[in-house]
Picture 1 (cartoon, rainbow, N blue to C red):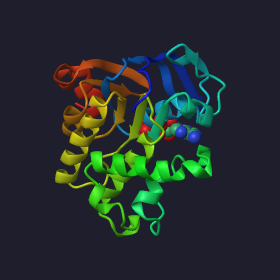
Picture 2: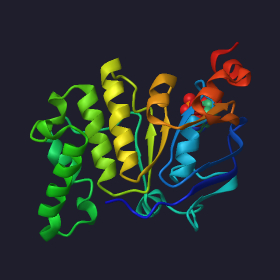
Picture 3: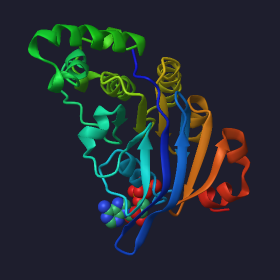
Length: 242
Ligand code: ADP
């Protein structure tokens, strides 16, 4: 149900805001179907990295490729169309919208009216696969944060991305909700989508990713298997300040 998997490649990306170097010579890859976590203290460039990859913010230097496509100078919607989806740190699910509609309408913008029934069926499929089928008929505003997050993930998966980027998906969730979300993201990954997950919670990232990238002051401080990065003294210094 997903697109052919593609390699995401960020090469020597730099971005400054005034005098602040938000990203400084950042390079990373995301292999097809791989799940990678990104950590780093506040202000280390995580959100800017996502914004550059998704075309929200133009890079000053460097390039981003998705498969053979150069993403530079493409508007965000065109990048999304190539197969790159994201969820936001503060998602805006309308409180009064029914969960199923929130997911189905993610594709409506490009779905001709006769196919909207099919979009609803597909939306129900994603909700069920994410374990949120029982909430399909409920208004988003009536759902706990963990359920709303799953609905946001279902919305993103509706466009059948080959890469899904998640900005702090665990924020504001309880520990059991985070554990469930990590498990559901793993299942989505097993379905073929590659994940790039930005979060503060290293245990959450360990549960949903295979590899960890640590940013510090706009640079990649470490990139490797979770446990290796976790023990890296540079990471401990960048991330924990000691
Ligand atoms: P993180 O997501 O890791 O907290 P950000 O990418 O949000 O880090 O920010 C990295 C640095 O860039 C910070 O110093 C931040 O203040 C600065 N920054 C980010 N976006 C902007 C902007 N639009 N204008 C000015 N400075 C910005």
